Image (cartoon, rainbow, N blue to C red; front, side):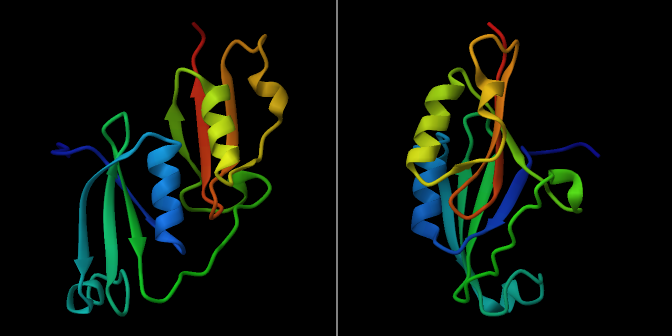
Length: 146
């Protein structure tokens, strides 16, 4: 396959405004498009029975996250204790220059740290952590060694 555009990931959200604020304010994403997808399209695509609003957010690395908000809120399914404990997308990874700063902003916005805080210490050769966003989606932050 020859890919013609960056990869996109869709996330069904319960609270579009809160998740929009998190992904733009904390993770630096920028809205590039939004559209109301009608039921006559969303139903045959098996995306939503009664249509949904889709907001395309471009990450600082040029990938795209689609926040999908349907009239009926989706069921929240929390990640297992160990991310390899079930199939499906386990987490999204963001590389950043200042992990401590991004994590602090994430926690202030409702994220919950999942991994050991010691992994982001000053002596770690590569700083990384996992947290759950305000709706439980898992995000990995990685700061490469200088």
